[in-house]
Length: 378
Image (cartoon, rainbow, N blue to C red; front, side, top):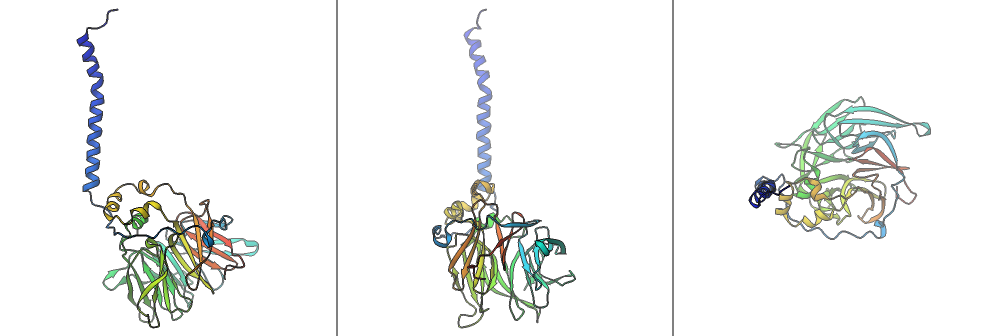
């Protein structure tokens, strides 16, 4: 069989190469369009620059351990982020679907779980007042009160001429005043990861006085406050600032009243829920520090650009990690409870109720329970 003439062979080779040329051109066009979008499209965040200190070493009380690895899981709730215990020792949990459950521990450690109330929002903080009402910090509905008959009342959903937004945590003083925080000025549906990347302090500390039914703003420009607790003497409020890895103290009484200072800085992760016992404080860490976020912290323009990409591209593939810290009255870390396997992760709340420590989470289904050791200060 004779081969085709040279001119025909050249035409055949040209035709076979033509699709590759078109593919390259289309790829270049696609990259140009994507690059143009990435550059011109508005960013979902307005980030600020800040310089995080180097992450503390895993030594001393932060040395790795597995003290959370044996935790029991109670129930099967969607993201039980908020926890409280009533005067009878019954446990309550607020979940991502707006439901509040009551967990009664009976003989032989049998647990009876029953619906208690529904907020219609997203409960992120729970505490009982002296009248036996369950006070709720609800991200979508504001500050709520639920009586023993499960009736839900809105205490307040405004502060001045502004609607409350993303209410996240609360603490009730002996005089009945309720101190609570708004996490940010973003809506509750806003991606928490973008909040961490943005690091723009827009949270607030507020106080609700039930005697006058009034709300007052005490402190503004908080860096994503996720936990609120009164100091042991109730002369101050402690607030965890997730995006700045610290707990600040707002003074309620004494010569520093009306001012704030640092209680503890340079924490090993994003601090979340705070609680107290007779000797100090417990702190849940939602996630360990993220090297990508730390490296990007001083570069707001780059953060604004990267916020347009899928979060996983920037966040990386770090696995979950369970971490709880016990602090003394002066803010020093005394011990840590850890789960390096990540079975427990994204912890949001830590609640001491001897002989147990209860843990809430924004990611898993079920409440974790771990037995306290004799040296854990409760």
